[in-house]
Image 1 (tube, rainbow, N blue to C red):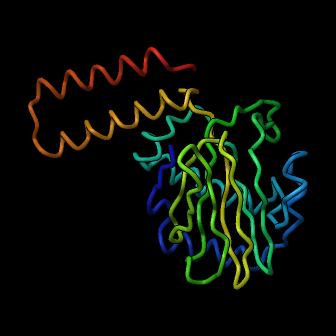
Image 2 (cartoon, rainbow, N blue to C red):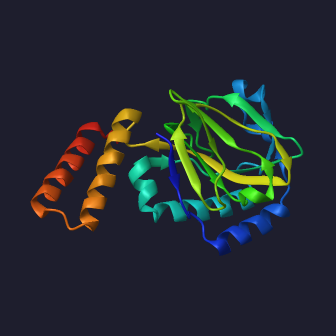
Length: 226
């Protein structure tokens, strides 16, 4: 399931983030690459755990907590602290699958990566290339969103970032451990929740809505792992 989450950050938040990132020191993206990613990763990122990464990451997390579509699609149990990367001058990230487990910095806790997330911070017409290509059973899906928009996709997906040949592509990336680990179950719950919300907006039969809502929560109760 690939889900676009619009307008996670406001225009003011984006402007402030880009201004801070334009002046930030960047390190080689290999610093946090796993064995597979190290073979194909050519980009730069903010040092994980730096003051700026924590400050901007807190802004992203606060915005996600208030975004009902993110909550519905991800059913988050825990979100890995957001990281930030930069691509320019032909930089790219070749085809790879994200590591299944990440150690949350400074906590000793391990997070299972159920969902991968990319939050675009620069407008798509300000750079050439940089598309996120996500492969599933229906082929490769090209994603290049407006600044402030987020894409969620299964961490099991083979994916890559195309070379950036003009301008710079800034983004935040992170992972989510969902309360519902199974992608198929999570997708069914999302479809059901989406349908319930639409029916609520159309003044559908209240008894039927109550029954559907009960089905949603009972399925969630059956599948949830906390």
